[in-house]
Figure 1: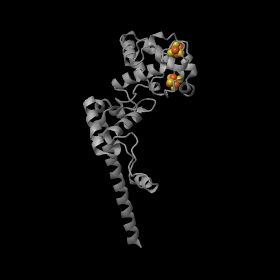
Figure 2: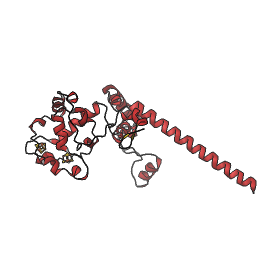
Figure 3: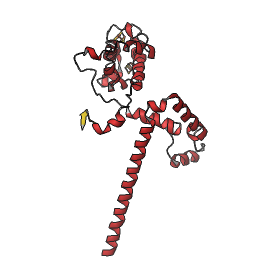
Figure 4: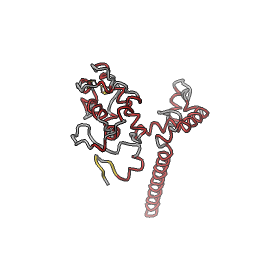
Length: 234
Ligand code: SF4
Ligand code: SF4
């Protein structure tokens, strides 16, 4: 069942790690006093945006923002909502992830609010609150699984490296099982794997791979049956 902007209810099991409430920062909705979290500003300050309260809403940040020029992302709006204590609206907003961290706003803010740091701090709180975009979850899971966010992906690449005189596997953690084991120990101990929903993610991926293999085997069997039938006819 669609729940807005194409999100489906059946995806909700994993969507706890994703932005499930797709509310544009541009939407003008009345503020519900029960939604106000008085501690949110302090949380943002502690998480890495200590100057947030210096913002006087001049809009220089949004006016300079290349991400905002192409999307409905409004950095000033997110900061305003944070200052009002609208935690849930801030952390569940998909626009929160549109910032490219180019730092233009930080260079230009007349109040030294350091908007980029504020956005990064709110992102950290968002992840701690269970909101993470699916592509980020996938990259994080890859690091835990194979020790690298962008692993080589098979012997084709290894052969290609060898052909041009490089060692088959680059000298990073992905080529060293002991390093992968260490990464997995660290992520388990620090709670990072829980934070990204690693086990559920890997189960879902295994399920997907199994389904794909079954479909492939079915297609192959059907093809073979067709060919046999053709041969019989001939
Ligand atoms: S430029 Fe600075 S003071 Fe102006 S709205 Fe943005 S964060 Fe606030
Ligand atoms: S750092 Fe982010 S919010 Fe600031 S101007 Fe760049 S894209 Fe926009």
